[in-house]
Image (tube, rainbow, N blue to C red):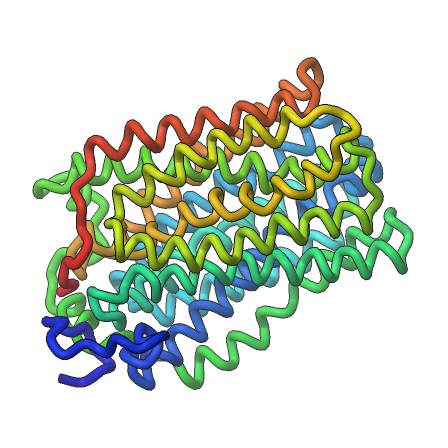
Length: 423
């Protein structure tokens, strides 16, 4: 059996370290590089907004609610982009869809740097969300269809770890740019660096192809890319609870991603360099969380891993935002496990959602559920922004813990899929 397609059995598996990488095969490894790069730069282009948010708010004279709306619009529109990309992935293929999404988010991130007023920035950011939402669905499915069942959780989790890599790169660039350029102009420069994905497009076009076996199943189906099918044919219950799970996890996460930089600056009184240092602990934890979560989702199963990190993430949000004034050392220390747990929970999404749907509906199902959850979860940062006026940013961020409670409830309606073959 060729190592470039989905394998029907785990007999004779390679048990050495990083077997997941070797068993992908040559074409599978190229697909991994393309998906990893796409998601990492997706993260980079998303994170430049939260990092520059204080400067942007000052430049345009925005309230905290208006500032939060920039993130919410991005995420709501990304749900549309993700759903559409899922359909495209089933109809025109995973790789073509990946290219379209990367080009979209790169172009509109750059245009954000040219915005002359708040409504223009809001519109550009919304269109950036179209590509931002679609990239993950195409890339995660692409790798999942190359990976063997035994290693699928960790293979896709390593793709997910690219989010931390992109986040780290954005913090480094942010620290450098804001140290050298006046804040009124620095946020524009930060957006302009969002042109980086253009380099990735060249690689994907030359090196990456869809997994042959899954592609054959997809092309033979008469119902590929059908929204009505993921709500019928016995899949309606799965779609509902998968979307609810994605809502809870992303509501909690985007609360943190959007408001922690502002929290560190306004309530902890940190400088740009100081904020970057504290975020380094958070991001280091995030990277290890993505990788570790992938191994755990293969070891413990998809549902147990989601349950474990939902409980831990919710508890750590409460602990992190309740640290008394003057205890900045504790803020630094707790940033690591907070980043670890709130990121590890994402490691199971790529494999879990792919295993819930057949090949002809995999992109549609994964794209819809994950991004529907992203759209509803997007209202968490805006809610925090409006609550911050009376509760303070730290107090309002407690609302994010509510999302992880929703995730726990959603698990009651979903099956365990560890070890499931992909057609």
